[in-house]
Length: 73
Image 1 (spheres, rainbow, N blue to C red):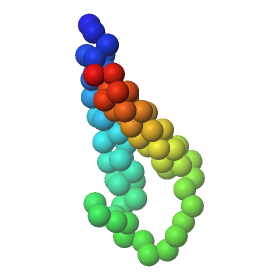
Image 2 (image 1 turned 30 degrees about the vertical axis):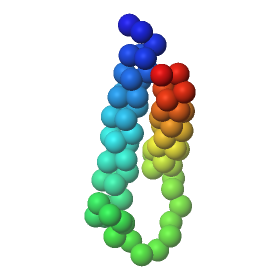
Image 3 (image 1 turned 120 degrees about the vertical axis):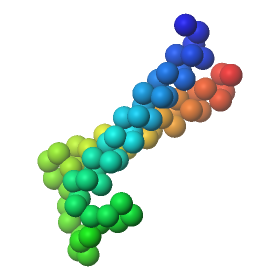
Image 4 (image 1 turned 60 degrees about the vertical axis):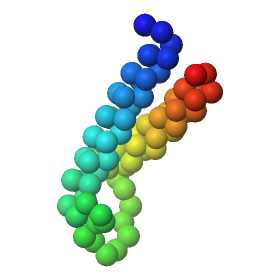
């Protein structure tokens, strides 16, 4: 397996995880797909906060692997 194939597989896995985590967040809010049903601001706690931080981490890793794949290949 070449380094190009490895980076592509990593991107595929990260993108699937990212979509899954985003869908879990939408499902956890109880609102529609394009926004929460609640009108007030509330803080994230517990699992919701962990999912939010994990989403940010996955986004940064996905962007980094994308930039690496463009620069290397």
